[in-house]
Image 1 (cartoon, rainbow, N blue to C red):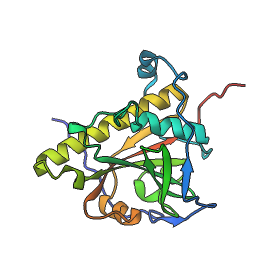
Image 2 (tube, rainbow, N blue to C red):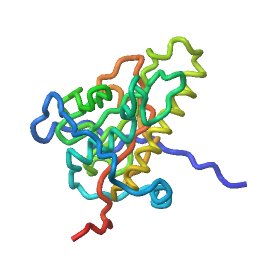
Image 3 (cartoon, rainbow, N blue to C red):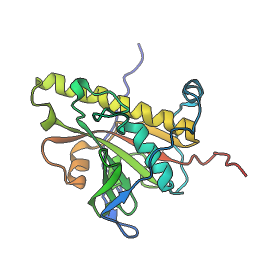
Image 4 (tube, rainbow, N blue to C red):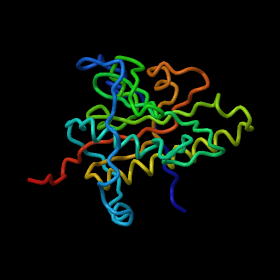
Length: 219
């Protein structure tokens, strides 16, 4: 019988938030998503993989907008999203940890809204690359939107929604030549405190995005 692998949660130097680097705008308007680019679906599935080594090069505003729309953007009239959500509750909020600040993705207006002008990339996980990659996504379950469900259903449904969003991010990154890895190894309480979340908001999953160090860029 194989031995069960247990994750250790010892404190790590530098896990605390850092001061923001650069000016943090109160909101960042994102370009409309480009619906014509990228690989066909089967090609993106073929290229999908996890990356754990990133450069520090920032994504362009265009890439960031396309990434977030692919993750869980509004795709049709009535507010339907690119990712499924049980009962259409849309209980997952996407936060973007950038060097200049922590932002929440406003899906209705396709923009970023500043939450805190600090760099919270470090607290999004225990791996050494999380504080170096240009951005980390944090999927936060807002349980106040799920009051009609029993607690067990809330946890399962929120986890399923976060997983669907994470897969959308994987497919976009595979299609756009970016690297990504979804990470569940995090200190949920410390991260929630760093993000100034309330008791109904729980970070479930983090996902690092950036350029892989071994990426071959077109000339």
